[in-house]
Image (cartoon, rainbow, N blue to C red; front, side, top):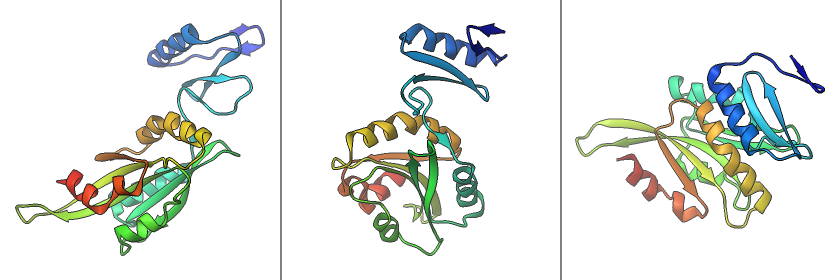
Length: 185
């Protein structure tokens, strides 16, 4: 069906409900886009997808599955590439790398997402592992970057099925090894 110059395509019921909600809250400057079954609301002058977050590069999902299922990686650091409007893999840590190696890969003045596979021993002397999702948004990063990472986080996390603990950090002390250990138990 055509409305003006836009074409409407069939969609699932839950997406139609989401689209109706977005239409209700949109302004004249905003356009509604339907892409691959996801409803999007974006400003006509902006490439960022403010309702659903950034697109996710397939390599992100692939590397996460390798970390979760095959334990091929200790950690993955993700960044938003604003030029191509996607979350991409920036660094992958081998299984032998430590938490210190991981924190050294996180830039001190730029936002990042990361997952870390934390191995620990419980009080009952059982070997366990938990996958942490870390949203790193330092106070010293650009405001635009903080807003972009915050608005894209939930959509990105949904793509990574198997996250067990979420941690948000604005300062290195908020993601120290002691904090990780405390949240794992």
